[in-house]
Image: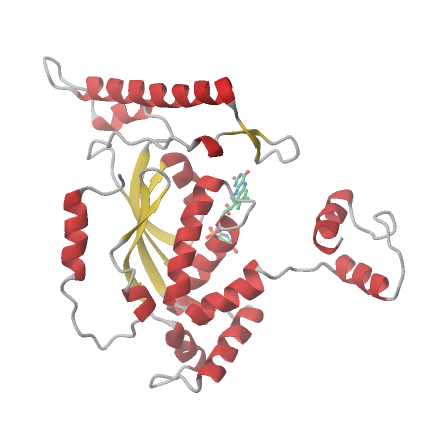
Amino acid sequence: MPLTPEQLAEIDALRATPRPTLRAVSEGMEAHLYKAAPVLDHGFVRVIDYMGNDAAIVQAARVSYGAGTKKVNDDSGLIRYLMRHWHSTPFEMCELKLHVKLPIFVARQWIRHRTANVNEYSARYSIMDREFYIPEPQHLAAQSTVNNQGRGAVLEGAEAARVLEILKSDAARTYDHYEEMLSQDGQQGLARELARMNLPANIYTQWYWKVDLHNLFHFLRLRADPHAQYEIRVYAEAIARMVADWVPVAFGAFEDYRMGGITLSGKAIAVLKRRLAGETVTQEDSGMSKGEWREFTEVWG
Ligand SMILES: Cc1cc2nc3c(=O)[nH]c(=O)nc-3n(C[C@H](O)[C@H](O)[C@H](O)COP(=O)(O)OP(=O)(O)OC[C@H]3O[C@@H](n4cnc5c(N)ncnc54)[C@H](O)[C@@H]3O)c2cc1C
């Protein structure tokens, strides 16, 4: 259960007191505000605050005094133009602040995205909760034989059961030891900042994470991609669903040009031109390495 009944009541209370505002709002994002979207077994993502909407991107691009928007078609065309030509600063005018609960090994990957602002739950100050990520059986997979950074076939039978048991019992044992070391019952009790070092990387942490839309798109392109690890991808996908409601036009352009588009090298363009002229091109005379050729033919056949 990602949230306690008390926490859910606090969210309901926040949503029960709307106030009029002169600020730009996005109706789509208002529907998400404060609510927690569950991710993995104990995690979540929830929107704490946001700034801007599709119109704010247009307004910044035109450096307008007023609303800055024209006809819907013009605005949509402008946003697509900005995305297509990497004119990125108007997207930086929109901001998103999230509250995320995530396993520490996912947080390690996430924190590599330096262009965000972060404030994390302090395990020096507070006691960590007894909450560990234990994968669903279908996500317990073997090491991939073709991708050193990926997973392959799902573990089965006795091996799957044994791995699950190891994960659960190790988590329980380390947390028991954590509590034992912290305890002040008949002893001084080890400092929280030291006792935590024995906890495994699948324990959950929490943070507030604030990022602008340009850098959020960069995060989503890398982490909502099928090559990203499943456990961070599901967070990126949950955020992407919120962004689609927040800035639908900008998200549509992002999906089209970044998620759905492909960057072609000069060599790849040359091969495609030769193919269109009826020539048969092989890896050897393409000028591409074997790896480049494999990736190229995965897309173009
Ligand atoms: C599939 C995958 C596998 C990965 N494998 C590994 C791995 O094996 N080992 C590993 O260490 N990491 C790995 N990473 C992490 C990756 O190298 C990046 O650190 C991470 O994706 C963050 O990307 P970023 O630096 O572009 O993002 P951000 O930090 O958000 O930066 C966004 C952009 O801002 C600019 N920028 C930010 N800071 C600076 C700076 N100091 N100087 C110059 N420009 C800057 C750059 O243009 C950058 O692209 C992996 C990532 C993915 C998606």
